[in-house]
Image 1 (cartoon, rainbow over the protein chains, first blue to last red):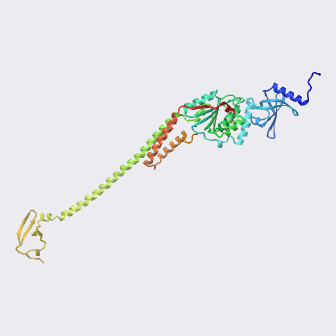
Image 2 (cartoon, rainbow over the protein chains, first blue to last red; image 1 turned 90 degrees about the horizontal axis):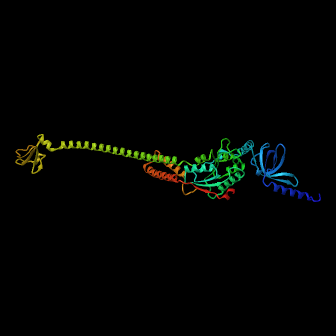
Image 3 (tube, rainbow over the protein chains, first blue to last red; image 1 turned 30 degrees about the vertical axis):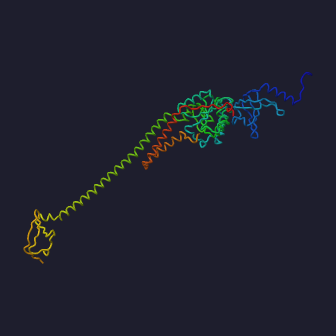
Length: 374
Length: 67
């Protein structure tokens, strides 16, 4: 008894905590949630229990994966500690629901909460640039999802910049790394045109990160438009609901993001043809109107010409009627004396020589008698 | 995004608009020829985008992963 160490109560608490820290630097405890409560909007208290035992936990609301309910199964990593006044507790470092039922329950509760906040509203959805020039890609470079996405993207479209944030897409590090990547891209001086967050399918637990509250909020808060593609069969993750667009698989994401260069090339050929046809049509219409106008001018000119020739005929007739030779041919004679036409008997005296012009001869005659008619 | 260089989306939208202007009933021939020239130039630029084969992939530095 005398060899036993003697310590004060505070020293004893200190010693115990050192021992606990040394013995369990890193431990995850699983159990059913009971007596869950939040105080002052900040402190979280709960028990984890199984058939035989129940242990008290303490944490903050920032460590919650989302809304929780008694009866859920949780996995909690934390530091066991003896509090100097309040006794034994485990200080929470991180926590997540486990088992399909609890994960689904937690996701449903969170979904209801975020839906109420309006995080998934259609009115928040933005259009993605089509095609983008610069893509911020958030995925694991070792995943099939990454290779599928890059392959389909490259087959369809080129000349883009793809910046990859290589992150864990499942496990403890997935949520903090994906959130950090979203924030990193949003803080760049030249931000990408779109963020693509993708991974292939997996079990409900594998995909859990994509229904995490903080991650879902980070997707919703991104100033860069987002496309989230998680390959899965049944439930849609909350991150997908918060994204501007969602795709069913990584390949589908690439198809949604960029056009297919062959289809575009055909389309441009059609547009070229359409350009040519439209302009040809306009030229033809212009040509046709020129021809029509030329014909109109010809018709008008002909009408003028006809009128002129009718007038000419009239004048010719008139002229013909006035021709003195015509009168001579009808038996009249034209008299003149010393090249002066005689139109009165007073111009003549007996014995004058005059010229008599008839239709086919000129006679010289002598005046024998002049009788002036009154 | 590069501001001084139009994106494919912008070029393609412009080409669509030129085409629909060209199909207006009251477009005169001088205008039509101008639009046609413009349309051809736009189609050429669009096709240049299609010919860009490679995508440039850059990996973010690992420290960026955790912010």
